[in-house]
Image (cartoon, rainbow over all chains, first blue to last red; front, side, top):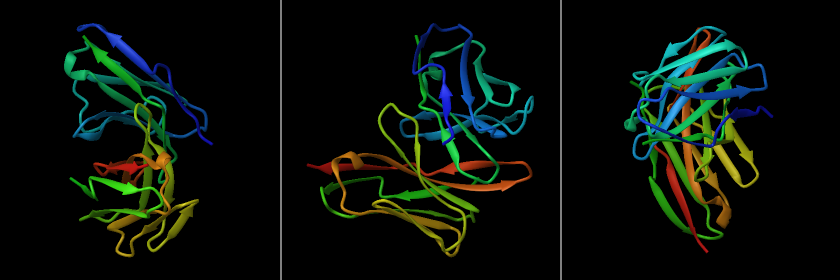
Length: 111
Length: 113
């Protein structure tokens, strides 16, 4: 089975800090995704990548950037964390047209 | 944009009962996926459906890809306490080299012991 590993389960950061969320998958999937999940809003796509060094904006990219230097790793970057970025962040990977596999999530709190 | 309507939003059931939930869309999807999410965890894939009309089982779970490609349902038979959680449907269309998954808002399942 595909394993998607997110580096941290819980993070607490201060407003204005630069935050890196790391995601690694072990099945050579070409597609990787970052979502955030908030009560009442469901899962919302922040960014996705379909190849190394390629990235596409999702529905809510503002305040975020991403990096994909290697196929197995997709990083989400909060350039200057704000309290409204407190959320559950979920990484996923897939091969095109097939099932998405999610990581366990990172619960980020910005204080 | 594309939207999925998932119902019911929540349900309480007696242990041993069967459960049914569904998703509908105004758009056609090529793939339907059903996930379960436990508190504080990421969604875990339960069933994947790739062809219209497809009926697939995974233990006590059965899901179907609607003929019109605009809907899907998930049934859970003989529910048990560990079935508690939030169930999400997700539809996928893909073009080019990537696709985006559209999620329903979830069905929160609570089981009375």
